[in-house]
Length: 327
Image 1 (cartoon, rainbow, N blue to C red):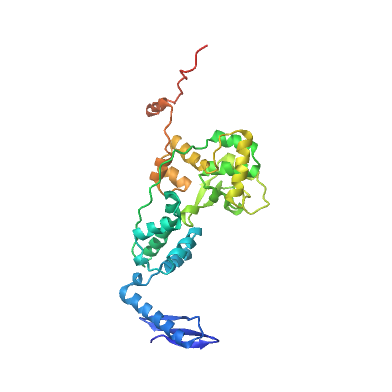
Image 2: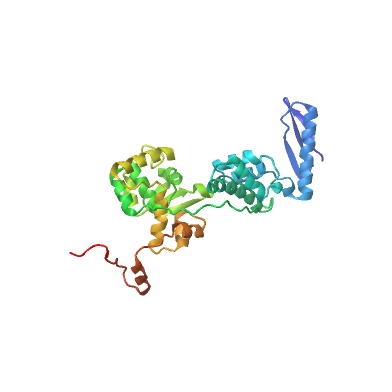
Protein backbone atom coordinates (compact mmCIF):
# COMPACT_ATOMS: atom_id res chain seq x y z
CA UNK A 1 0.00 0.00 0.00
CA UNK A 2 1.16 3.61 -0.54
CA UNK A 3 2.96 5.40 2.25
CA UNK A 4 0.62 7.04 4.71
CA UNK A 5 1.48 9.53 7.37
CA UNK A 6 0.46 9.44 11.02
CA UNK A 7 1.16 11.68 13.94
CA UNK A 8 3.31 10.63 16.88
CA UNK A 9 3.58 13.41 19.40
CA UNK A 10 4.41 16.61 17.55
CA UNK A 11 6.04 14.92 14.55
CA UNK A 12 4.51 13.18 11.53
CA UNK A 13 5.78 9.71 10.56
CA UNK A 14 5.20 7.56 7.48
CA UNK A 15 4.70 3.84 6.90
CA UNK A 16 3.59 1.49 4.17
CA UNK A 17 4.81 -1.01 1.58
CA UNK A 18 6.33 -0.01 -1.75
CA UNK A 19 7.40 -2.59 -4.35
CA UNK A 20 7.18 -5.33 -1.75
CA UNK A 21 9.40 -3.47 0.69
CA UNK A 22 8.02 -2.18 3.98
CA UNK A 23 9.07 1.39 4.73
CA UNK A 24 8.61 3.44 7.86
CA UNK A 25 10.28 6.46 9.40
CA UNK A 26 10.00 10.01 10.62
CA UNK A 27 9.45 13.02 8.39
CA UNK A 28 11.08 15.20 11.04
CA UNK A 29 8.38 17.85 10.83
CA UNK A 30 5.13 18.80 12.56
CA UNK A 31 3.71 20.40 9.42
CA UNK A 32 1.26 17.96 7.82
CA UNK A 33 1.57 19.38 4.29
CA UNK A 34 5.37 19.12 4.37
CA UNK A 35 5.15 15.64 5.88
CA UNK A 36 2.91 14.49 3.01
CA UNK A 37 5.42 15.81 0.46
CA UNK A 38 8.31 14.05 2.24
CA UNK A 39 6.39 10.76 2.32
CA UNK A 40 5.57 11.11 -1.39
CA UNK A 41 9.26 11.68 -2.18
CA UNK A 42 10.25 8.62 -0.13
CA UNK A 43 7.70 6.55 -2.06
CA UNK A 44 8.89 7.87 -5.45
CA UNK A 45 12.52 7.14 -4.55
CA UNK A 46 11.65 3.60 -3.51
CA UNK A 47 9.84 2.94 -6.81
CA UNK A 48 12.72 4.43 -8.81
CA UNK A 49 15.22 2.17 -7.07
CA UNK A 50 13.01 -0.85 -7.71
CA UNK A 51 12.44 -0.07 -11.40
CA UNK A 52 15.80 1.39 -12.40
CA UNK A 53 18.13 -0.38 -9.98
CA UNK A 54 19.89 0.76 -6.78
CA UNK A 55 22.38 2.92 -8.71
CA UNK A 56 19.52 5.23 -9.76
CA UNK A 57 19.03 6.44 -6.18
CA UNK A 58 22.32 5.76 -4.38
CA UNK A 59 23.83 8.99 -3.05
CA UNK A 60 27.42 9.41 -1.96
CA UNK A 61 26.25 9.99 1.61
CA UNK A 62 24.48 6.62 1.54
CA UNK A 63 27.55 4.92 0.07
CA UNK A 64 29.67 6.49 2.81
CA UNK A 65 27.25 5.17 5.42
CA UNK A 66 27.65 1.66 4.03
CA UNK A 67 31.41 2.13 4.11
CA UNK A 68 31.33 3.30 7.73
CA UNK A 69 29.06 0.42 8.73
CA UNK A 70 31.71 -1.96 7.40
CA UNK A 71 34.24 -0.42 9.79
CA UNK A 72 36.39 1.05 7.04
CA UNK A 73 35.91 4.78 7.61
CA UNK A 74 38.64 7.12 8.85
CA UNK A 75 39.12 10.88 9.18
CA UNK A 76 39.15 11.33 5.39
CA UNK A 77 35.67 9.87 5.04
CA UNK A 78 34.02 12.91 6.64
CA UNK A 79 36.03 15.28 4.46
CA UNK A 80 34.84 13.76 1.19
CA UNK A 81 31.32 13.21 2.53
CA UNK A 82 31.04 16.92 3.21
CA UNK A 83 32.14 17.64 -0.36
CA UNK A 84 29.96 15.17 -2.30
CA UNK A 85 27.00 15.15 0.13
CA UNK A 86 23.83 13.78 -1.55
CA UNK A 87 25.17 13.74 -5.10
CA UNK A 88 24.20 10.54 -6.93
CA UNK A 89 27.11 8.14 -7.13
CA UNK A 90 26.36 7.41 -10.78
CA UNK A 91 27.03 11.09 -11.59
CA UNK A 92 30.49 11.05 -10.01
CA UNK A 93 33.16 10.35 -12.61
CA UNK A 94 36.94 10.46 -12.88
CA UNK A 95 37.05 14.08 -13.99
CA UNK A 96 34.88 15.29 -11.13
CA UNK A 97 36.96 13.42 -8.56
CA UNK A 98 40.20 14.92 -9.84
CA UNK A 99 38.58 18.37 -9.84
CA UNK A 100 37.43 17.79 -6.26
CA UNK A 101 41.04 17.13 -5.28
CA UNK A 102 42.12 20.39 -6.90
CA UNK A 103 39.30 22.31 -5.22
CA UNK A 104 39.87 20.91 -1.74
CA UNK A 105 43.67 21.09 -1.92
CA UNK A 106 44.52 23.87 -4.38
CA UNK A 107 48.15 24.28 -3.26
CA UNK A 108 48.91 20.70 -2.26
CA UNK A 109 51.16 18.24 -4.03
CA UNK A 110 49.88 15.31 -6.05
CA UNK A 111 50.53 12.83 -3.24
CA UNK A 112 48.28 14.77 -0.86
CA UNK A 113 45.49 15.08 -3.42
CA UNK A 114 45.69 11.37 -4.12
CA UNK A 115 45.71 10.40 -0.46
CA UNK A 116 43.10 12.83 0.86
CA UNK A 117 40.52 12.85 -1.95
CA UNK A 118 40.98 10.32 -4.74
CA UNK A 119 41.73 7.29 -2.56
CA UNK A 120 38.86 7.69 -0.04
CA UNK A 121 36.29 8.73 -2.67
CA UNK A 122 37.15 5.75 -4.87
CA UNK A 123 37.24 3.39 -1.89
CA UNK A 124 33.75 4.42 -0.73
CA UNK A 125 32.21 4.08 -4.19
CA UNK A 126 33.95 0.78 -4.94
CA UNK A 127 32.80 -0.66 -1.60
CA UNK A 128 29.22 0.10 -2.65
CA UNK A 129 29.99 -1.52 -6.02
CA UNK A 130 31.08 -4.70 -4.25
CA UNK A 131 27.65 -4.72 -2.59
CA UNK A 132 25.96 -4.47 -5.98
CA UNK A 133 24.78 -0.91 -5.47
CA UNK A 134 26.66 0.78 -8.32
CA UNK A 135 29.46 0.43 -10.85
CA UNK A 136 33.13 0.55 -9.89
CA UNK A 137 35.02 3.77 -10.36
CA UNK A 138 38.60 4.09 -11.59
CA UNK A 139 40.43 7.39 -11.14
CA UNK A 140 43.87 8.22 -12.48
CA UNK A 141 46.16 9.47 -9.72
CA UNK A 142 48.05 12.75 -9.88
CA UNK A 143 51.71 12.33 -10.77
CA UNK A 144 54.03 12.05 -7.79
CA UNK A 145 57.73 12.79 -8.36
CA UNK A 146 59.95 9.96 -7.24
CA UNK A 147 62.14 11.09 -4.37
CA UNK A 148 65.10 9.05 -3.22
CA UNK A 149 64.34 8.21 0.38
CA UNK A 150 67.10 7.83 2.95
CA UNK A 151 66.34 4.74 5.04
CA UNK A 152 67.25 4.35 8.68
CA UNK A 153 69.57 1.44 9.45
CA UNK A 154 69.59 -0.92 12.40
CA UNK A 155 72.83 0.70 13.59
CA UNK A 156 71.07 4.10 13.58
CA UNK A 157 68.18 2.67 15.59
CA UNK A 158 70.51 1.11 18.16
CA UNK A 159 72.36 4.41 18.65
CA UNK A 160 69.04 6.22 19.01
CA UNK A 161 67.72 3.69 21.54
CA UNK A 162 70.83 4.04 23.68
CA UNK A 163 70.17 7.78 24.13
CA UNK A 164 66.37 7.99 24.07
CA UNK A 165 63.81 7.40 26.86
CA UNK A 166 62.66 3.74 26.92
CA UNK A 167 59.27 4.36 25.29
CA UNK A 168 60.76 6.51 22.50
CA UNK A 169 63.56 4.04 21.85
CA UNK A 170 61.01 1.24 21.76
CA UNK A 171 58.97 3.25 19.25
CA UNK A 172 61.96 3.47 16.88
CA UNK A 173 62.69 -0.22 17.32
CA UNK A 174 59.04 -1.11 16.72
CA UNK A 175 58.74 0.82 13.48
CA UNK A 176 62.04 -0.49 12.11
CA UNK A 177 61.34 -4.14 12.92
CA UNK A 178 57.65 -4.23 11.94
CA UNK A 179 57.48 -1.59 9.19
CA UNK A 180 54.63 0.16 11.03
CA UNK A 181 53.68 3.72 10.15
CA UNK A 182 54.00 6.30 12.93
CA UNK A 183 50.23 6.54 13.36
CA UNK A 184 49.95 2.75 13.49
CA UNK A 185 52.68 2.46 16.12
CA UNK A 186 51.15 5.15 18.32
CA UNK A 187 47.78 3.34 18.18
CA UNK A 188 49.21 0.08 19.61
CA UNK A 189 47.71 -0.72 23.00
CA UNK A 190 49.00 -3.14 25.60
CA UNK A 191 46.14 -5.50 24.85
CA UNK A 192 47.46 -5.77 21.27
CA UNK A 193 50.81 -7.16 22.42
CA UNK A 194 51.19 -10.90 22.98
CA UNK A 195 54.61 -11.58 24.50
CA UNK A 196 54.08 -15.36 24.65
CA UNK A 197 53.32 -15.68 20.95
CA UNK A 198 55.72 -12.83 20.08
CA UNK A 199 53.06 -11.08 18.02
CA UNK A 200 51.41 -7.68 17.93
CA UNK A 201 48.23 -6.46 16.26
CA UNK A 202 48.69 -3.41 14.04
CA UNK A 203 45.72 -1.37 12.84
CA UNK A 204 46.62 -0.23 9.34
CA UNK A 205 45.64 3.43 9.11
CA UNK A 206 46.04 3.75 5.33
CA UNK A 207 44.17 0.55 4.51
CA UNK A 208 40.77 1.57 5.87
CA UNK A 209 40.31 -0.46 9.00
CA UNK A 210 42.35 -3.51 8.05
CA UNK A 211 44.60 -5.15 10.62
CA UNK A 212 47.68 -7.31 10.45
CA UNK A 213 49.72 -9.34 12.90
CA UNK A 214 53.44 -8.64 13.13
CA UNK A 215 56.25 -10.71 14.60
CA UNK A 216 58.20 -9.38 17.59
CA UNK A 217 61.96 -10.05 17.26
CA UNK A 218 63.81 -10.48 20.55
CA UNK A 219 65.27 -6.92 20.75
CA UNK A 220 61.77 -5.52 20.26
CA UNK A 221 60.31 -7.71 23.01
CA UNK A 222 62.97 -6.40 25.42
CA UNK A 223 62.37 -2.80 24.34
CA UNK A 224 58.60 -3.01 24.83
CA UNK A 225 58.97 -4.85 28.13
CA UNK A 226 61.02 -1.92 29.44
CA UNK A 227 58.21 0.57 28.75
CA UNK A 228 56.02 1.78 31.62
CA UNK A 229 52.46 0.49 31.64
CA UNK A 230 50.82 3.58 33.09
CA UNK A 231 48.91 4.34 29.87
CA UNK A 232 46.73 2.33 27.51
CA UNK A 233 48.95 2.93 24.50
CA UNK A 234 52.37 1.28 24.58
CA UNK A 235 54.44 4.19 23.31
CA UNK A 236 52.66 6.84 25.43
CA UNK A 237 52.46 9.63 22.85
CA UNK A 238 48.94 10.82 21.98
CA UNK A 239 49.91 12.54 18.74
CA UNK A 240 52.48 12.33 16.00
CA UNK A 241 53.51 15.94 16.68
CA UNK A 242 54.42 15.19 20.29
CA UNK A 243 56.45 12.15 19.30
CA UNK A 244 58.20 14.07 16.53
CA UNK A 245 59.29 16.84 18.90
CA UNK A 246 60.93 14.36 21.30
CA UNK A 247 62.39 12.41 18.38
CA UNK A 248 64.16 15.42 16.88
CA UNK A 249 65.46 16.50 20.26
CA UNK A 250 67.25 13.17 20.79
CA UNK A 251 68.64 13.11 17.23
CA UNK A 252 70.10 16.61 17.59
CA UNK A 253 71.55 15.88 21.01
CA UNK A 254 73.53 12.82 19.96
CA UNK A 255 74.47 14.08 16.50
CA UNK A 256 72.83 11.39 14.36
CA UNK A 257 71.81 12.18 10.77
CA UNK A 258 68.42 13.94 11.03
CA UNK A 259 66.00 11.30 9.82
CA UNK A 260 62.30 11.29 10.64
CA UNK A 261 60.47 8.54 12.49
CA UNK A 262 58.82 7.54 9.20
CA UNK A 263 62.29 6.73 7.83
CA UNK A 264 62.15 3.64 10.06
CA UNK A 265 59.48 2.27 7.74
CA UNK A 266 61.75 2.98 4.78
CA UNK A 267 64.55 1.23 6.65
CA UNK A 268 62.39 -1.84 7.26
CA UNK A 269 61.60 -2.26 3.56
CA UNK A 270 65.16 -1.57 2.38
CA UNK A 271 66.70 -3.91 4.96
CA UNK A 272 64.23 -6.68 4.11
CA UNK A 273 64.98 -6.42 0.39
CA UNK A 274 68.74 -6.30 0.96
CA UNK A 275 68.45 -9.33 3.23
CA UNK A 276 67.08 -11.24 0.25
CA UNK A 277 63.41 -11.18 1.24
CA UNK A 278 61.22 -10.95 -1.86
CA UNK A 279 59.07 -7.82 -2.45
CA UNK A 280 55.80 -9.75 -2.04
CA UNK A 281 56.73 -10.93 1.46
CA UNK A 282 58.19 -7.54 2.34
CA UNK A 283 54.95 -5.83 1.31
CA UNK A 284 52.83 -8.26 3.32
CA UNK A 285 54.95 -8.03 6.46
CA UNK A 286 55.10 -4.23 6.28
CA UNK A 287 51.46 -3.61 5.44
CA UNK A 288 51.78 -2.41 1.84
CA UNK A 289 49.09 -3.45 -0.63
CA UNK A 290 51.06 -2.43 -3.71
CA UNK A 291 54.06 -4.71 -4.20
CA UNK A 292 55.26 -2.62 -7.14
CA UNK A 293 55.38 0.42 -4.88
CA UNK A 294 57.66 -1.42 -2.47
CA UNK A 295 59.99 -2.46 -5.25
CA UNK A 296 60.16 0.99 -6.85
CA UNK A 297 60.38 3.05 -3.70
CA UNK A 298 62.55 0.97 -1.43
CA UNK A 299 64.63 -1.12 -3.81
CA UNK A 300 67.84 0.86 -3.23
CA UNK A 301 70.79 -0.57 -5.11
CA UNK A 302 73.57 -2.11 -3.03
CA UNK A 303 76.90 -0.37 -3.61
CA UNK A 304 78.99 -3.50 -3.03
CA UNK A 305 79.94 -4.83 -6.48
CA UNK A 306 80.89 -8.22 -5.05
CA UNK A 307 77.21 -8.91 -4.37
CA UNK A 308 77.17 -11.01 -7.56
CA UNK A 309 79.19 -13.65 -5.68
CA UNK A 310 75.90 -14.68 -4.13
CA UNK A 311 74.92 -16.21 -7.47
CA UNK A 312 77.43 -19.02 -6.89
CA UNK A 313 77.03 -19.26 -3.14
CA UNK A 314 80.16 -17.32 -2.24
CA UNK A 315 79.84 -15.04 0.80
CA UNK A 316 79.92 -11.36 -0.06
CA UNK A 317 83.11 -9.60 0.98
CA UNK A 318 83.75 -5.90 0.70
CA UNK A 319 86.62 -4.94 -1.56
CA UNK A 320 89.28 -2.79 0.12
CA UNK A 321 88.92 0.95 -0.36
CA UNK A 322 91.48 1.79 -3.07
CA UNK A 323 91.45 5.43 -2.04
CA UNK A 324 93.26 4.55 1.17
CA UNK A 325 96.99 4.21 0.96
CA UNK A 326 98.66 1.09 2.27
CA UNK A 327 101.04 1.55 5.15
